Image (cartoon, rainbow, N blue to C red; front, side, top):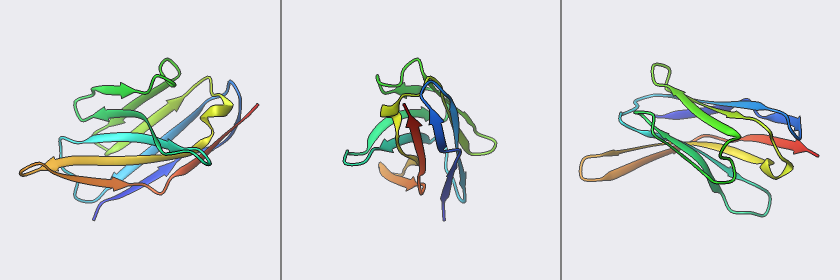
Length: 120
């Protein structure tokens, strides 16, 4: 059983910073990809940034230059450093862990989400 636990959300003023964490536990296979998504009220869930086991990253244009993802493979933890936050960054942020095994079977695991609120 794989579990993901996010933490670090909260209320911050525009221009401020927050750091989110997502710790994975259980039987985890590598290589894998850890991804942050977010979902604002009334909107679809969107990809924020992903990072592969080897460190390759993929950022959404809306967060490039402001957010930084990094991971500690020894702790199966991914972090999201969010700087220069904007009110439009307000959302529930979710962590997802994914790996592929065998003949291309994908395994996806989600965290419970953490609320980020940016006030103007």
